[in-house]
Amino acid sequence: MKEIRIDSRAFSSVAERKATSQLVSRPETTALPVKERLYVRGDEFFIDLLRDINSATRQVELETYIFELDTVGRAFIAALGHAHRRGVRVRLLLDGVGLPLAGGSLLAALEEAGFPFRIFHPIPWFFRHWRHMAGGRAMPPRFTRLLTRLNNRNHRKVCSIDRRIAWIGSFNICALHLPVAHGGEEWRDTAVRIENVDTQRIERAFQRAWNPWRWRPMRRRASPPRSSFRLNDTRRHRRALVRDLLRRIGRSKRRIWITNGYFVPDERLLHALNRAAKQGVDVRIILPLVSDVFFMPWTSATFYGSLLDHGVKIYEYQPGVLHAKTIIIDDWMTVGSSNMNSRSLRHDLEVDYVVSQTDTKMALVSEFLRDLNHSQEILRAAYPNRPLWQRFLAHLILFAKYWI
Image (cartoon, rainbow, N blue to C red; front, side, top):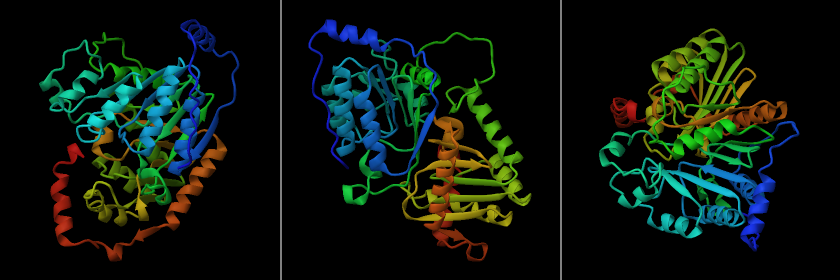
């Protein structure tokens, strides 16, 4: 990864910092056109995101599932720490399961950097995590309450900068996404940078996850707000997003192209995809041949027979780990963190973005077709093509589908 130079100059006085804070807090008065850029390479994604953080003047809120203390993680800690020292409001939100085991070295590095960070639903028996628990130190940690929420994770990968730039996708903060030449494993991911967009909705979702234990009064139920950001941060929003996806699949006329890293559909989603293919829609799904969760390809393969019988085309990505999460339904397209499994549908916090610009849509279609060229189609005549013991284990794992 290219070296990112971080300006080390700090504010010389509290008065200067306060004056700058007042300057950058002025509301935007000019409506600028929305700009989007698609990212599929980890090195390009990290370099440009770090550049935005280094240029931030008002606020940086970064939310990620996995944060490793490697070359990428250290670069982000340095950039966030520098932004914090120059007066930018910086907040980092991590997930308890997404941290390295115990995470002692990472926590020490974050504490030394000095900017605020919290851990969403810490692992109950890692007591050191409790003092950084989302909700703040004022709320006494409760072992049993954390234990009951062990299955509810924050899987979002999102960064909001200066209330006008948003980064949405499936890249975690770790070197796995880098090219092999730069010390990574070249995971295949997709993200989008959106500029001149109202980030208020993702900021509210961040705040809710930052203080998940806070009591909130009951309010009159309202329809989920219309937005390009698809958030499942409440039960009502979660149900609405599932209904909307099923409705779009059911109304599709031309194509349904899906790229997904963890494909374990429920009955409704499986039926909707089969029905669309049977009605003549071009349904194609690209899934990983190799996954960071070793049993995931075996589990996904248990659905191949039903899908293939109804005309769905299935492809397995060959070059490496496929981790991207994108959906193309006719001309409606999304990029984000949501998988087609029980975790995303029922448990985890996710965020996806509905692409709006024609150039970005064309780029997303081109990347899907490029991935097809690096994938092998699964044919009905060659199915099942996995050893009996793998298929047997996969069916056993499906009994625990609620957890995966």
